[in-house]
Amino acid sequence: SVMSVLLLALPSIFNFGLLMFLTLGSLSVACMHLFGTIQTGAAINAILNFSSFGRSMLTLFFISTGESWNLIMEDCINGDPTTNTPPSQYAAPIFFMLYMGLVNLFLVNVLTNIIQDSLAYASTGRSDGRQHLSILMRRQDLAKLKSLWFVLDKGHTTLSADPH
Image 1 (cartoon, rainbow, N blue to C red):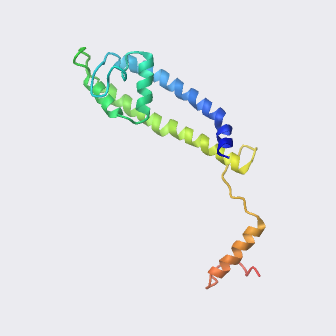
Image 2 (tube, rainbow, N blue to C red):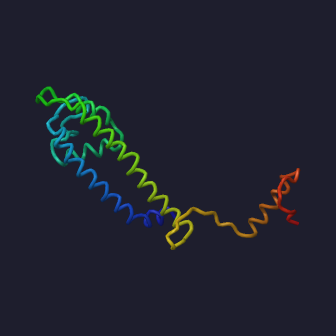
Image 3 (cartoon, rainbow, N blue to C red):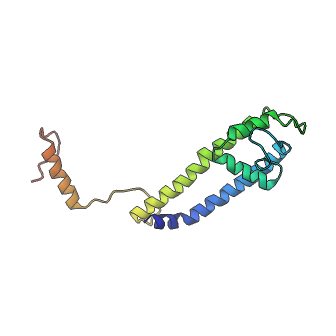
């Protein structure tokens, strides 16, 4: 059942991956322009930097996991004294805050909703586009619930009639 939900969600997950790739690609180009000359810092090193498109994509993906994004932001704010890169005191905080908000609040929620909608569709089996989680209850289950409720409700505070 879990595999059927994932298979059902596969086209939407592919579209989400394409959206994520396009987002990371366009923001990587912006990072290359803004922070491409910074080579060293507390978190920026030979692997995590914005000097090339691939490295920039890798760094943004690394940041999107929430790992050391504040240190990378501080490195971009302070600049790089070894290459005389001027500090980006205004651009770096704005960029990284917007990026973390976009990735964590928007894209992660989109992926979660894709899986949730696929689970809802798989559990209800409805093909009319309305995908709501529902509990399917048979009439026998409902009658059993009512009789058990009357056993537990000693003061007969319910408005419905006795099921017997």
